[in-house]
Image 1: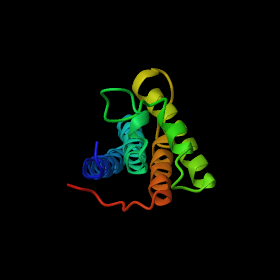
Image 2: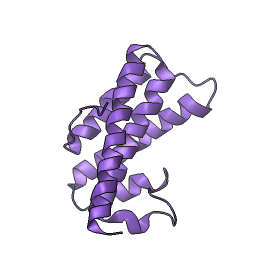
Image 3: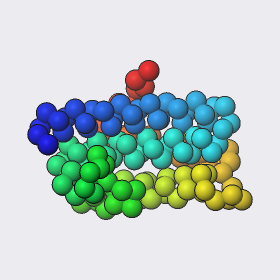
Image 4: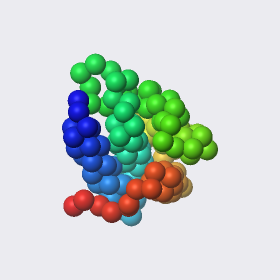
Length: 140
């Protein structure tokens, strides 16, 4: 892919990330804790995919995919040379934390996802947006 395609795709992932963040906020306000946790994770995932594409990491994505795997993304972010080591480690930790809670919310019946964990997810994804210097606007 060329530079123009990478820019277009990165912008597309950022647009999705902003929509997911907005959805997480709405779901949290509606006390839909599972949905808020899910959308918080995907806002983080989508914004980090955009960063990886902008950094030129697309060659590390699995063949025929437009994004890295969920397992792969934290390590790609940790090795992203456009960010400080402190920022990279923080992003990696945020992604792992949000993914674990998202898996609890989506797959692990009986795990607690509640009014304490969902707002914490929003705080973490907002921190991730600040580290990446992304605007927290929604695209609706």
